[in-house]
Length: 629
Image 1 (tube, one colour):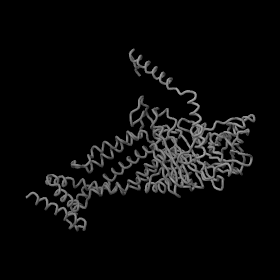
Image 2: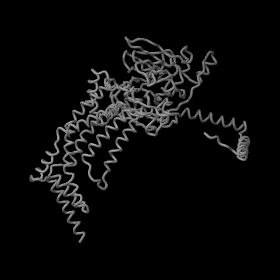
Image 3: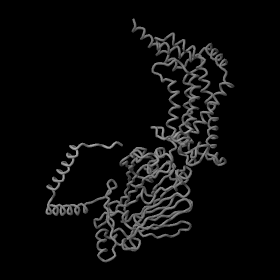
Image 4: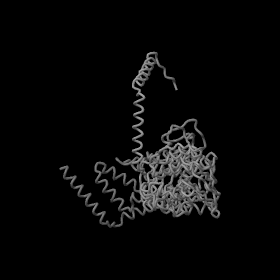
């Protein structure tokens, strides 16, 4: 960047302004008496506010606690001044930042004494795009879990600043870690973690014992859970599209926050909260639903000026919820899930967690759940190459849709035969749109053809096509599976790196989108050429659409999952083959023409709707004729 240059007058001006500011600050500096009075006033206000303070889930107060280490009686006095009854916790040997590890064959968790929360969460069986172990929480830097406690002696304490005492034990094959924030040996707040073999879900509970005289019973304990989603995929922008907050509320309903930044989205009766990161998710589940919860989501990728390769975090999530004190104590049985967004794994828990996987809404999700997922699972059970699974799955779908394809092409062939007659009608009534429409409709009726007949088969295919558009980006099994030149079917393939970045396109060239674009262009050339008519006013330009669709595929799919582009390439390739077979071996244009001519000679009985439309058009024509007189 070119360095800014200042002349001498500008420099002198800045020096004078700075000097005046310093002088004004000095002149207006409060005296020592004024400072002392202000300090006394502030202390009085703070004491009054502490007595009236009521913490709510909407505005949790985050009073910072500066801990002291009571090595002597004076230190213990200071600790009690700060922590009240909880001063006992800092007298224990556990009052230091140390870690306890619990793990099974798929998950490793490292728990910090300070705050009692997870310092590291590692998924053992997975690696990131750059071969680093998958961390959902790393070094305690991207996550926190805190309870705001209101004590009977007018203190507001944050558990994230206090020290818990760890105790590790076994429950059969399960590892159990008890983290206790103690008031005495028999009075404490406990986080209890229990992890069992081969499971990404662990039991978690928050319970208190003997704190009925320590915690204010008519004020909820405010739970706050924060997490920054760590980037795991090659394309940060693509991964970010599928990174958001999901939750279940009001006894079975589920929703998500979406991709944009969000402040304070509030829902009631929350059963679970999931911070989703495309292929991985952190979920907090509760047996006793939270009365309410607020969610915030900040889109870090959209706000950063870093290039894609330098991005470390995608979104910043926060959830705040009240925990009700009953009988003077806390008692919440919960679960934590740290693991993959694999539909099969999440669905097996029978907690509605499969809704975290974005399979599409309504009929599209139903098609994915009951058709494509079982078909994909069946094929991958005996075919090791996931690229071949996609190809075989595409072939089966296209065979299933081939009768629909036949109907569509037959309709296009009829329209092609009628094209000269339609052109003649257009020329004959070029100045009378109503008459032109009447005769065109009459021709379609006599010939047994309809332009809508070609659209209906396309509409029938749309639910399947959209369902697959949702299925492939969500298929966890495609993650880091290679095929041909693509090293990861869940991310883009690269055949060339660009020395610069093109907006919307990226800094690389992917081959599968290029092949898919060529196949789409050939297919659209065949279908558009079949039905191409003179451009009508107000109608879309078919040639423009024919060129635009492949271009959009080429540009926008350059950063999409190569598995999706592979599907579109194979799908259009098969469609082209089916169309060539239908055209050359099944449909005979001369027979179609003869059938149309035969249909014209048959008396055609009009339905009530057609008769009504004819009458309305004739009345409109008569009114138009009267108006010209």
